[in-house]
Length: 215
Image (cartoon, rainbow, N blue to C red):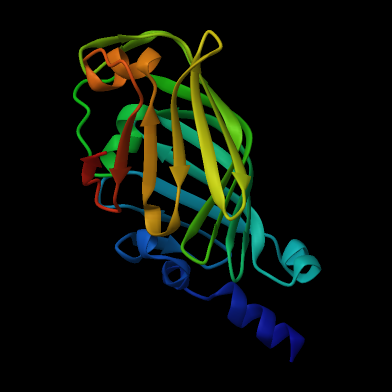
């Protein structure tokens, strides 16, 4: 009986992974639930390898995952359950690839962010993000961009992100439920992010589909 159950689980189609969240529901799958991949309509690809031993130990499907796009490569560990937990996230992600996934168009952007040992948890329509990302100086949307340090901390059921250049805060982001975000651009970051100088903070509210309103 145990052998039969193991064989049945091992042959479970990769499409089952699509039930864990909307981002994967439109992907094309190959492989199995335990070891497979999914290719998104935008061209990016997600791969995974579920460890039977880790799954038994944690009580939830657990293992390793990877993400690849044109100029991006991320790897890490995962645990699926009531929440989706991605840990030990390490690699390089291109800003252009992220914008492509979000159906946003920042124009030509040659920036990439280096991520080391970050953690992302999706639970109850909330995004809990902890980690540090760094970028080198470059150009994006026809603007010169200095080297940036991006630090995120998950507190009180939300994530607070700070964007700094040479120690100066340029912007902060508060991630809410369902992908909503409140972005605060400081006067020091107004020229970079808004294309104009401001004497006070500018607050932008971003909805799930990228709509925004100044306040």
